[in-house]
Length: 210
Image (cartoon, rainbow, N blue to C red; front, side, top):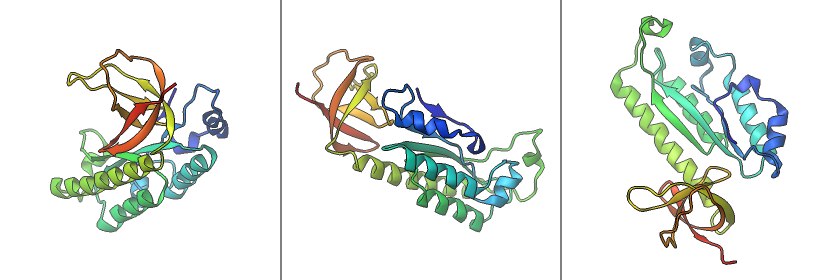
């Protein structure tokens, strides 16, 4: 069981204790949306937390739960977002122990207050800022994966893909692609795998001999 997309101000301490307990159904995965690392933009979005409050929650989680995978969502190009406010977001994402983030551009919707705001950000700038954050996310995910190379972790295997490859996920949401694949049906099986090498946004692994 994974926890995803809750408000930073509504995270109970017991949640991290459950994640820390290997016998509990909650796995060490935590997705906490940020939206922006700029307090001024968060206020315009009518969010009920500050960048500091968000950072405190992330640090509390990382310090409590070993091997925790932490993901987030961040929006770029909200109306009136200037270069300094975007830089604040980048710097916050860079310094926090986040594993990955989904970066997406603001899209105006009729009927919302943001739709009528002046100083809308150009599509080109939104695209540039999204790309910068996606590159940072790729770097951070790779660094997270790197620390587990050589370890053995249980992997829950999924259905085989149309291309014939089979992959699965560790409890802390590392996608593993099987190296020594003999074509067996491994769906929904939880099996120990040695994590051997980085492979883009995944890790290559081999079954551990019994």
